[in-house]
Image (cartoon, rainbow, N blue to C red; front, top):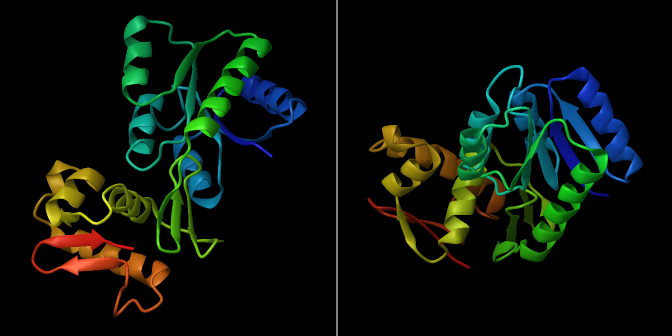
Amino acid sequence: MINILALEDSPPLQSFLKTLLAASGYQVNVRAKGLDGFALLSEQSFDLVLLDLGLQDMDGQDWLLELRQWSQLPVLVLSARDGEVEKVTALDNGANDYLTKPFSANELLARIRVLLRTNTQTSLALTCGNITIDPHKHTVTLAQQEVKLTKKEYAILLLMLQNKDKVLTHNAILSHVWGEQYINRPEYVRVHMAQLRQKLEINPASPKHLLTEPAVGYRLVD
C-alpha cells in the first residue's frame, strides 16, 4: 500500500487528509511538527510527503532543505502562502509540486497520482554488492534485509553510491553531508564510517566495500 506522510498543523485539515487519503486507498501518517516527521522517516518507508509550510516547530522551507540533504522522496507542498516568491523558493528548495490552499479533494488526489506515477517511472535503486539503497523510498537493504541508518549515515552512503569507485576526500564528504563549516574535521567522517561498516560489512575490521584511502578519504567498491 502507498504510504504518505502528511505534515500539517491545522487539526481540521489533518482530519480532512486522513479521511480523504484513507478512502482513496492510501496509508497516511499525519504529524504537526517537522521533527516528528523526520523521526517517522527514520522508522518507516514512505512514498510521498505532503508538506505544509507553517509547521508548529519550524518553517516548512527549512524542513524541505534538510530533507533534500539525504532524501529525494517526492514532496507536494500544501500552503496558504500564495505568493510567487514563496512558490519559487519551495520549488528551488526541492519541492516537486506546490498546491495553494484552499484546494479541492479531486485536485489534490490528481497531483498525488502524478507524483507517484513519476516517482515509479524514475526511481532507480543504487547497488553495491549486496547493499541496495532506494533514494525515493529512503530505504537501505543488505542481502534484501532492511537496515536502519541514521540521517548522516544514509547521506554518506548515498553520496558514496552515487560516486561508486571514486575516491571521496574527507572534506568532500563533510561539505556535502555536514556543510562547509565542518571542513577539516575528518573525525566526524571516521566515526560515521565506522558505524556504517558495523551495519553493512560482514567483517567491519576488514571491509570489502567501504574502503579507506589513507590520508585522503574513502571509496566504495563492489
